[in-house]
Structures are given as structure tokens and as C-alpha cells.
Length: 173
Image (cartoon, rainbow, N blue to C red):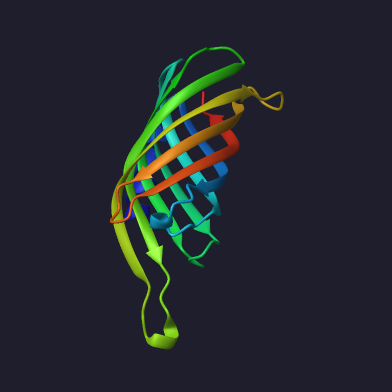
């Protein structure tokens, strides 16, 4: 169902001028509180599609998948979020800030030896971020995106993440 909705939203967005698509990889760190399972470090991938309302404002949809390797081996986190991004400048180097909000799904690994299956929990989350978009010398529609994000997930045990991402953004003109 999620994939179908995302595909339809992507087709709708890409059918307009100023549509955009970008992919980003992330390094993720959690705060080191015992209540957050002390997950320490993770990796992730993020896919975004969106639309430029004007030169300074983008709206979009973001899908993320994070893998962690701390105390809880095979713990994963997925999200489907709506995003609003505001660019401070309209030059070749464009600082921005953004806010994302949506649904996060945590996967807690099961223990086959004890016949315990994987457990999934859905929670609401919010992710403010700052970053810089750089123009690329490769193609006028290709940009390099860097971003530092803080995510707070309102789960049974709150999860707080800090993620650094770098990726490529393509704008359809």
C-alpha cells in the first residue's frame, strides 16, 4: 500500500515543471541515554520527491530506512514523512532549513530460539534540519545536498536521532 501511494505521488509530482528527485545516504547517531537502548550508530538511505513552489520553497515526500548495529542487533527504523524546505539564498550555494513530520516504524528483531517473532511499532515523529545545497559543475539540474537533521520519535520509549546526510538532487526543468 505504501509503495503504491508513493509511486502515485511521485508520478503526480514529476508531471509538473520544477519537480525534483533526490537520494541521500545518512550516518545516524543517537543520544546515549539508557532509555533509548543505547543504539549508538547507524546507516541509512533516504529517497525524496518534491516540487519547487518558488525559488526559495520546496514541498515533498521523504522515505527513509535506517539500520542500527548497537546493543539491539538488527533494529531498523523506517519513515514516511512530508517535508517543507526553505532556502535562505537563491545562489549557487543555498543554505536551507526544513521540517519533516510523519510516521516512523520501528522493527524490533525476534528471537527464533524462544519462538519470538519480529515486533513492529508505528509512531509519530518530527525532524527539523539545516543544510546546504551546492550547484554541481556536472549538469545545471544536478545539485549536491548536505543536511544535518534531528529527529524526535514519540514512541513508547522516545527515540532521538542526529543524522548527517549527503546526496544528489535532480531538478526537472
